Image 1 (cartoon, one colour):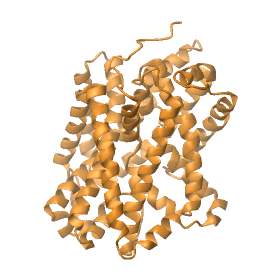
Image 2 (spheres, one colour; image 1 turned 90 degrees about the horizontal axis):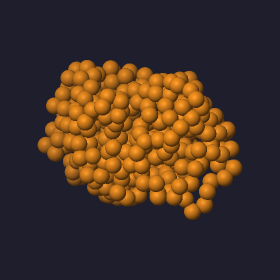
Image 3 (tube, one colour; image 1 turned 30 degrees about the vertical axis):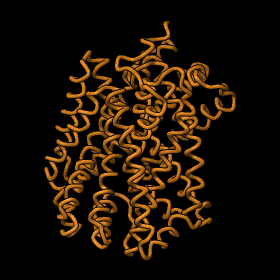
Image 4 (cartoon, helix red, strand yellow; image 1 turned 60 degrees about the horizontal axis):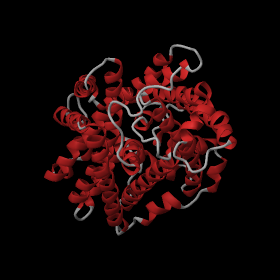
Length: 443
């Protein structure tokens, strides 16, 4: 059997490792970093939670993320082609069918995510005009998330994503992430700096960083830290594979994975420093989920001097995180349409955009969107992640994937890596899948 396809995929490749890393960070940084991570840190022990979280980030970054990058680079295609390739190395069929599961997960998340990003875009303009801060926060949220409540903004988000993707890998994905991700970090640093001077903000820092060591004895703390770390890195068996397929053979995938994990963690920490102290300064509830971003924070911004412009900066930052994540989800599906339906790139992007919009308009109503995302993130995505872990380290095998990981590395990975990947990482992905169902979501 031949080692596969073109040395460079049909869509080209990233021009630099930095561009690749920023695109991967753009995919990983999302709503979970912004509205869930800060709340969970405080809820499950502050610094005690962070210690566990950092440990899982290191493990999942070195083994899980690098494995998906290497898998994509080896096969030069997305999950359907990659899983099919792995199965054929064992003389088996059906890999393409299995690869469709994480692909469906990416499409499902994209549908729901586009709705949420549409709400964010509407909040930017509401902040610019001042309408959002002058209106009761609960009422404004209800208007935005009603039946067809943000249709115009929804269409705008899908079009923006499609336009970026139409530029291809280098001129589209890499270029836009190289601009948007640094801007995301700069804006959150500015917001966190302003929040630091709010009276009462100290209580928020205490919530985030004072360790409650008793939480280390709670299994739930470990479960939530593991889930947060796993899903924060977007190890879903699809998105990081497709970006890996656009990576040059000379690059060190493990170094790129560690850098991506580090920057993703920095983004989550910045979000915590920008949000939680502000919430505590005005003695509000730091609950996670849409209420934190779309109801609690607007109430905070309305009370801060210059809060209108802080709100604008904040929601622009969230928009950047949302768009860069959507780009990755759309790309997974568009590449599949190109490869397996023999479509031209722009046609494939148009098809994915139409599918995302046509389904998404019917779940703009927040309760519908919440149920949709629960189904996708609790059942489909974790199962796809498990399939990918097994496909890489058991079906394809450590010898083949190690060969790809070692391409570009000064020192090859060894037996410790192989043992960790096969017996610890794969076990943890199965555990994440089971616990996601038991807890109705852990990331």
